[in-house]
Length: 349
Image 1 (tube, rainbow, N blue to C red):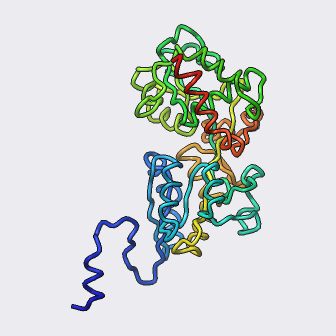
Image 2 (image 1 turned 30 degrees about the vertical axis):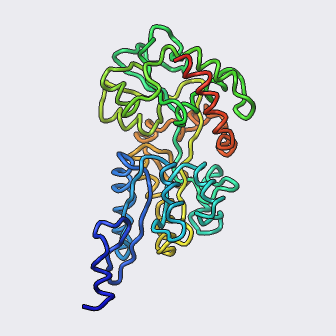
């Protein structure tokens, strides 16, 4: 046996990201969120893409959050094995700054011209691929009438019956921004009014670290109210009718942006670009919205009335309730926000 052959056989069979050789086939690795997001994205986007492009094989590598995804890209920087990554815009900014992401300008491919104005942020290499919004979760059997205001979280009759993931989870930060907005403040300046307001509500919170998540706490009756994200709230509402519901309160909310990113020096850059173009197409955006209730970023994606009913921020009335949030500014404030959360909130909850 030759030395080369022995060396190949010596490689561990389970080595991560090692792709099998396939003749006349290009293989790319897609990095995205694990769990229900992975299942839905595989069904709505990846499987149809592979049917349309039979010469490109897409392998989904799932991780729980954007921070872990960024860590994976950093670990592979010298020899990238990921081709495309889908994660939060603030981490796309960091990855762009660190040279991990290949920036895409609006004129880089035809489909990008169809994206809405919020899809491109200066310094962020990847365009927006989905929008989501902070939402109020509630148990219909326990909270009557159905709430339409964030202020229900401050109602003392729900003391010990609320589940909210606290900071450093973005859900906790989002609640501070909402509370700041409700007080007439601006998150871009010190958010003391928001922190003080959440601190007053803290005794009502059963758990600032609900595991596995606040949706489950509401579904199983451990909590009556919670704070989460609309897409997942709507998914769980569909799966558990009558046990959980999600609502966009009258005081409004904000958009959180997921971006799709070309990884710099990836093994298959051309195939990766073809996948990104497909993922941003009206067909892919519509299919994922129908299945997972994320708002599309392509202005040509036509959503059915049934789907729109689950994505309030995709409607004119829902968009009118959004207040602006500069996530790049938030990223710069992250350490300070975490310190204030520990000082003002955890000491009260």
